[in-house]
Length: 335
Image 1 (cartoon, rainbow, N blue to C red):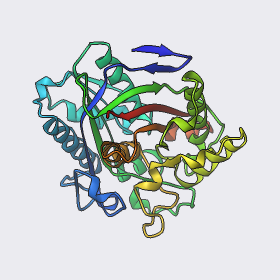
Image 2: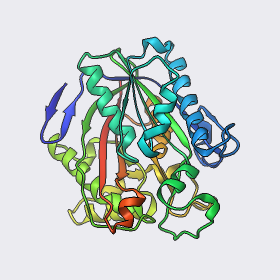
Image 3: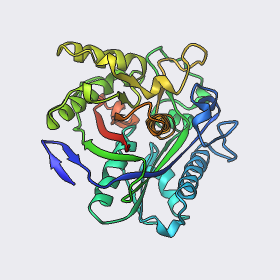
Image 4: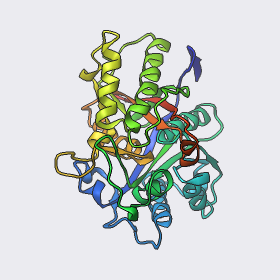
């Protein structure tokens, strides 16, 4: 492992041993339903509150990833996990039931790739052999946390996104498997001075643009090196903005780019406004669908750029803007 350029690292021995994704009913009913490990038929997820429902999703993904890896919990060196709830309570409350050291992390909806970057550093640095990287989101907990409770029934504009209900777990190991994590670029916090919490796609797009550009610069490469460049949850309007920003540089990134928020739902038949968002959006699509295509050889090398909006209701009420952050990770198929 070594640092490259201003913000990037190269990994030598970091591999994907297993992964698991559990989702809610709307996600299962979308285009990628068959790729998920499991789902619940309603948002309560066999629980009594929204927060406990999200904990159940988290628990299911955690246990399934360990099971699929053929490990027991004492063989997992660390959990690196985060979510959108105050003080990342979902991951913390789940982890109290397992005999595994935990590192709590937060980059809003960019948490999935942040966890993988840190987990990769631990594994490649020889500080652990198996590292479980986790994240989750829930439509009802996120609405209550960042906007209005679901019960309020407030009307949303077309720029709004639907928070994905789900949890994703990926277990990193130092032993070679069919999928290797080879590169990563750590994003900077960038404030485009947007202040609309119902248009987060466009608030995050500039940070995705800057992270992708920095990735190209640090590795002296272009988008041609990748079969796919996918962002986490810019959805429709954020993707439009990202494409426009690259066009100003003379680059047509639309040839290689798509967004997880546009893959997890069908905007034509599902009422999701601009598409999907939330910590689980990037994790669910990447760990299930995209890595499956990588294993099957339909892709050989993909760049996943998780995107996050760093705000909360208190700071928004103080007329603050919404900074963004994006972290990028390269997944490659080993032939």
